[in-house]
Every structure is written in C-alpha cells, then in structure tokens.
Length: 263
Image (cartoon, rainbow, N blue to C red; front, side, top):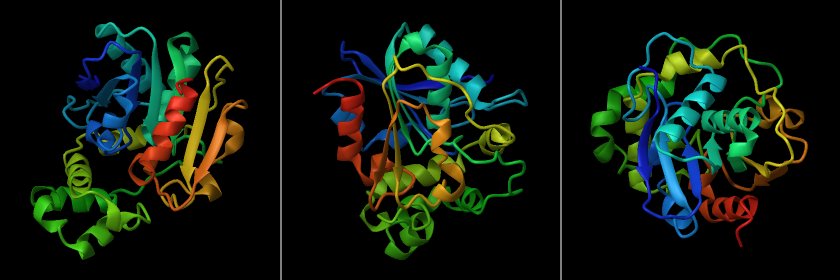
C-alpha cells in the first residue's frame, strides 16, 4: 500500500505542526528540532511511503502532489484538521503542494531547501545513486563506521559544510534511513518531468530557507525564486547545507515560530 505512516505525535494539546522529511530520509531527521518545537506545538512526524517504517511502495504514481494528498489523508485519519507545515527537500515540495491544494487547512508553511523549484525539470536520473549504494552496503555497521572522522567526512562532506559537528546519532539515522529506503528510486522517478507550479494564497504565511552551501539543490538550477509564492519570506543561511534543521536548528526554529505568529 502507498501510505505514509505516523511516526511520532507529541501529547500536547497545542496547535499542530507537521514535519515532512526528504527523499531517502525518515522522520528521524527531525530529532534536532523536535524538542525545541514541542514547547509551543503538538509535533507530528511521519514517514513517507517506502521510507522509514512506512509500507513498501508498489508501482502506482507517487508524484509530490499525490504524496500531498496522502499526507492530508493521514491527518484526517488522526483527527488533525488544521496545522502548520515544515518540509525539507522533497518534503518541502510536498508541503508546497499541500498549501496550494487546501490552503484553508495550512496555518503556516516553512520549506527547508524545498525541491521542485528548479529552472527546468529533470528528465532522467542516475541509474544508481552513489550515496544510496553506499548506504545499502554500510547501514548495518554505520554506528561503528561513523565514529571515524574520515568516514563522516566522506559520507556527509558533500551534504553539509558542518559535517564535523553533526551528532553521531543523526549521521547513523541518516545512513540507516537511506539504506532501508525501499521507495527511493520509485519516488525519485516520480519527481521527473515535474516542478512546483501552483499558487499559494497570501493567507498562508510562507518562508523558504536555503543554505548558502546547498550542493544537493544548488542555486544555479534548483532555487528558482519565481516559482515560490510571491509573498514568501526567502532566507539564505550562511555556512549551511541541504538540511538547515541540522546545521542551523536555532535559526530554523525561530523562523518556524515567526511564520506561525508565535513569539
């Protein structure tokens, strides 16, 4: 079945915030900011189809717009009507689709290095991604392997300039999430030939955050500002890679609060 799976829901009765991870990742990617968000929100994390603990995917369509509908369905199943949204990479694209699809249900939106804002949609992908192949091979020994600074640099240096400061648990979680991701290639293929091209009304406060060292979605071809909502707040964080919630957690949380109108 192609369904996302609820990973975590804090017991708070505060207004909800839904966090959506990226391609090849999982709900565990949000660990650095969940405790900071819980002081103001009921935090909800999920695993997209074929990711984390969610079901394997079949060969049905999994374009970001479809994933957006599935996340809404998951919220319906859990009685969550209105919520704030945060998404990273593919999750950022899904969040954008959700805000365009049902803006009356989205109280605020923060996209962290969102995919889909590219000048020209990709038409092909590499048959095998080196990072995925490596994660498949080393996921079981990642806790031992990533204690080595050299191995951490090899694995995370292309992803963030702050690889040396990443928590070991975050690194291990990331490798295991990618290595166990059954829906990786299928979800990647579903993004081909597409980009975000919808309109989000001004009623949804929107913030887009990229890192100045995002080599996964570089500014040259993947940060087309004209595709983002015209009213959005556009931020570029210094010395920051593709996962701003890892590299700049305090600044990210501050911007999430600001978008939601929370002091």
